[in-house]
Length: 463
Ligand SMILES: Cc1cc2nc3c(=O)[nH]c(=O)nc-3n(C[C@H](O)[C@H](O)[C@H](O)COP(=O)(O)OP(=O)(O)OC[C@H]3O[C@@H](n4cnc5c(N)ncnc54)[C@H](O)[C@@H]3O)c2cc1C
Image (cartoon, rainbow, N blue to C red; front, side, top):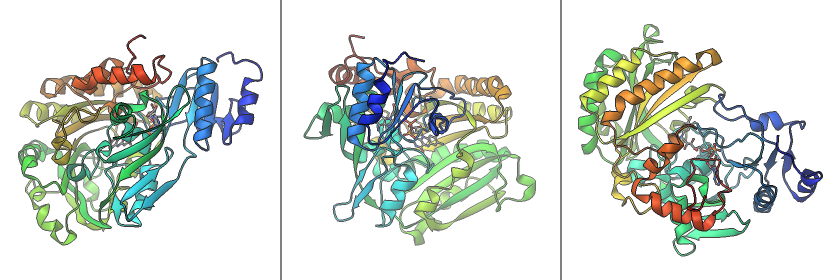
């Protein structure tokens, strides 16, 4: 535990509108836990900020007391960067305002907001912006790393829809970042993660979506997966931007539309979302039905907001998780064989391999337009090792690493920064490719002493 000057924390408590938690305080233990249960860290101080003034005060307190500083939005990051050992956590969960301007199609979003909370407010006006597929994820961390989900093929990455942000920088100042103000900072936060300061407000552009979309699940026995993946890979380029099809290989959950004898058996699931006119959904998604003979399917119109929550039960917080990720432009036979080999060796029932489909609008932006640079990626693969018992740690982690190695020869070499685990700091420059040098320049300007380093760190040039 760090040695804080006596009275320092008491003075901080007096200066904060939110709450300051230390180990002996009620609520501390809950506040230090995040989505990934393998992260078990004990900060010296957790500042649950109520507003921008608290954020500024907490940033200055960490800097002046030479404390390691972590920033928590939704607490979903697999690397556990939201929580540090010793040091100070800026906890933004209580900053929950979402203001929708339905006429201008704008959303003003505070950093403690989850995807589900954002969708709830925006869908009240039939509006949305691209976010991820699990409603309890934080808007803040997801957006700062790039952000993609069911709407990305149509409307791009989350960062492509970010119009402005308010950022508290390492000196405690509040900077407005948009195309006309601090444009280097605005460029850097659109993919560069939490390296440049604490974002206290995100302004997004919104689009008409739903309220109903056509979507659902199409499930095949694993024996058909090789053929289905080849057909899927061949179909991707011709798919309209309105259609997103992701695929996951895993043991079948006990879904009500699957026959009981399929439950627990290895399957390949195609999850699809069509955001064009709902009445055209059946025809527009027909291509997926050609991938094989299903053991179950559940397709039809449904509220967009409900689809955004469809995977929540499989991704609930509290399990142990370890991920490895690659980007791909296509799905060659060697990659498919490697995936099927890994599925034949699942170390634990909740482990899975998924390919999130991007492309469409995400590829029509120049790589240097935002810090997020993987504009050639058509699939973001993630091998999810997920288990409950700490005794399974080594086995599950080894499984994920083995498949990651086996699939590497087919990968682009870039990686989505939000899927990196804590020991993958060496891949940060790969995540940004040609944009890395410009990110270092922005980091050197806005955080020369690397106060914001408990993240996938971009080091300033002098450190
Ligand atoms: C179950 C699950 C599903 C996911 N699905 C998707 C998906 O569909 N699409 C996708 O793109 N990603 C997805 N992700 C990845 C997700 O984008 C990252 O985990 C992201 O970091 C989560 O943001 P958070 O705010 O919840 O996380 P946190 O762990 O709170 O934050 C992560 C890091 O972001 C930085 N940060 C957070 N808030 C701020 C802020 N206000 N200012 C400055 N820095 C900040 C900090 O460095 C922090 O450590 C998923 C993750 C999980 C666990």
